[in-house]
Length: 393
Ligand SMILES: *Cc1c(COP(=O)(O)O)cnc(C)c1O
Image (cartoon, rainbow, N blue to C red; front, side, top):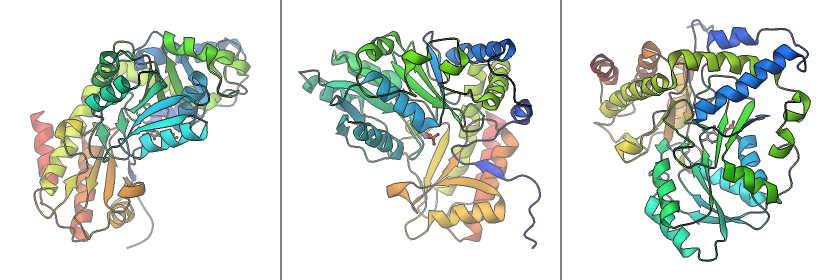
């Protein structure tokens, strides 16, 4: 066969996700004076329209940055050197965020996890009850840990903090859940939520977001971690050059404006229901693969398998990286691999953002073909099961 590729590669990396044609076209514009009224007004609507996506009335800040930038913004704006923070482990992203916090001078109180379960609210409650002196200043939760495919229960962790009568800020990384999985910042009592443009928001990488409660905005007045670029206080202005701490990411904002229009047209509830249905089709296929030969979901409990990404363990003695390479090279389905301790054991199917039924069926088919070609033991018939699921749901 020729090396020339035709058709589209199916992008199922858990970030970046597919960028809709409409968003691509919206960005295909000449540069403009970003301080002139039309662009200032468009930018203002982006800040406003991000609020209902987070389900908050509080301020949203945008940074020319990826998700890691949003992490640093959340920490550096609210905490002081030597503050303790509680880091429940759900996978590589929870660990990496915690390590970043440590490098900024914060002290980690680690709640160990096996990367196969969500956060245990009772364990969080107990750790906070034991903190008589109130040394813990923040709880760092990852809603969907993209490395493990595990979704944790945000309201349950809020209740744990309240039950312990603890004053810690509640920070939630919604980078892989916003506009994919239900998230209600204000109703659920979240103090800082973070997002990035290249996941459920269907944009190129390059905009990081933090949404902030009143309590977080209060904390920022007394927090002493050094910050300049990330400083929320500086960015509370309509002056474009200052609110972005320099040149605004003009074209990303054009793209974001279009993506926000698309989300509004579909309706956030429908977007979330679509993710639920398409993830159900993926899992219907994976269920069948897991019936034979030792393949398994990484997330052990069905209720903790996220609607944005599915992590699948290959049978012992098989190499998930090989599955990933052949799926991409021979069947045009690009997926994520296992990170850190899961490397080689896990491949990850992203199902966030601009996706529909045939794209999902195509991904299940391409992966099943890969398993067959590589003789990875698995139950056959995942594609038929995914079709059945879509017909019935
Ligand atoms: C992708 C992701 C990140 C990191 O985002 P970058 O844009 O790559 O910095 C952090 N947390 C979660 C849950 C993610 O899915």
